[in-house]
Image 1: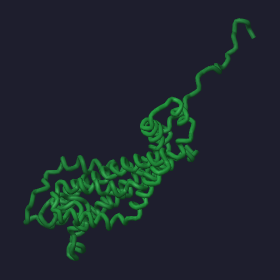
Image 2 (image 1 turned 30 degrees about the horizontal axis):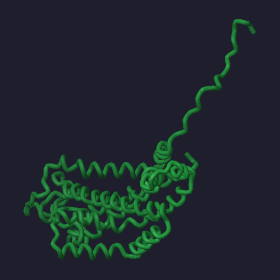
Image 3 (image 1 turned 45 degrees about the horizontal axis):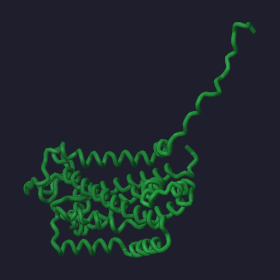
Image 4 (image 1 turned 180 degrees about the horizontal axis):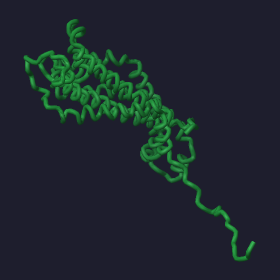
Length: 308
């Protein structure tokens, strides 16, 4: 070898590639789950359909025309008209706004209550844990649908304004569905509070509020996300059931549940399927899509899943 030629050596001091964050890894796992991706596409479509679609409709929700009642689907009315001559496609899109909003807001209320009470129970333990968990046991022992029916009947007897009735419905559903999340968060907190980073917070003298909301609860976000995602579908089904029974969202405000209940006789059921099949299909698609997303997130955020 010539003295002028220096051997090429590999630089072994180059910095190692930083490992992907939890969220990048979870997203990669999620996108490799075909069913979860299909569910995500479907739910995005439903949101665009319900929140953007009405702006492209040439009709109005309150356009009543008895001459156009119960028309079958056509090029003019793609999903036909109802018994008051209103465009079914527009009503389904606007009804979807209500149903999706009820599901999201009710779940948000349940998450706030469940995560807070679960964190307090897990962190303090002793009598605080006992009281909160016994309250959770009482709520879990209550049959949710009969309770919702009773409360819906109470709202009807009190003649609550239909414009505000939906907000009461959100709060009621949220208050009844916090227990599962509270138990899951409590279990996570019981494990996390014994780890080394919590000993460091003790050494630093941090206040309990900061320990809970800055260090413990953020570590339970994967569990909260998965549980909340699955709870949205449950809340939508509960609202649809109440509206179908006439105890939830009441006309003229449309929801998928009360649109199905409009086909309340054999003639409508057999000869006018456009009155009940489209809203029923929307409920089916939305709940299945949300459950697919929830299953995908559960697998993606599970630390035991080693296959990337």
